[in-house]
Image (cartoon, rainbow, N blue to C red; front, side):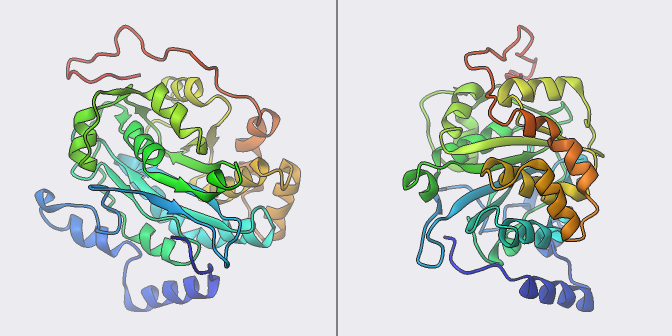
Amino acid sequence: MGSGTWSTDVYDAAAHYRTGTGASAFAYSDATTRGARSGWKAHPTLDPHGLTTRESRDSDEHPTSLAVAVLFDVTGSMQTVPRTLQTKLPELFGLLLRKGYTEHPQILFGAVGDATCDRVPLQLGQFESDNRMDDHLGNILLEGGGGGQMTESYELAMYAMARHTSLDCVERRGRKGYLFLIGDELPYGKVKAREVRAVLGEDIPEDIPITAILAELRQLFHVYFILPAGAAHAGNTEVLDTWRKLLGQHVIELDDLDAVCETIALTIGLGEEAIDLQEGLDDLTDIGSDAAATVGKALQSLARHSRTPAVPGTSLLTPDDRATTGTTRL
């Protein structure tokens, strides 16, 4: 996937049409959730069951593709995130392309829930260079469920992205893509074979510790976790400490959800060494964004320690990880 070119004019035309007709940018989710929960399912373009490979490929049009994946928790208070993200796509592309952070981004959107209880715990679009990514974003089911135990199945998403993606930026040029998890809860401590079978339709011989699947994922992607203000567990010490054990400085606390696209864009710009933080903040001012203060605060630590890895070999499992439900938690 990944042909075509992003057009803000096409995006604006679609937005104006929806405004004029009263249509929703998330029509599939709105229509689905009006029906009985027993009938909820992922849109066919996002259904991971039987998933083979999500590809980010070079082409004559995009000779140096860069894979970017944005996966967000859609449970509880987090289900507003994709709606906010959808309204900010032009800002994301304006920074990535017009400011030269990367020439040929290919973006995949996906969603994460809880495989222990949700109808649709994982949704994955395709890597796209054009406005089809807006279509994939709009097809996400905003389930809003979750297990109520401050844990979601981020590790299942990690598994799918580690084992079922193929990226030319890595395979041809040895340059990792970027993966952003946007959430406010803990991952489970292992990828469970039974959940892989149920959600992906794939058999694996045994459960996989999250540290092991994350190590695989980080061969392909620079992995970040963004915890936005307004989420149920924003600022939660246990959540932040756990993710920092996993990702080191790649944990971003964001005071304003409206700044999520700008934060993603500047993180990529920093990672690609296209800008330093001040240059990125100047770019925000130049495009008329009022997010500079929020983004500067969120990325200050990352800018200082962008080369600092998480500590390898550190066990994240504690003696009370095994809850009465039989699941393993961090």
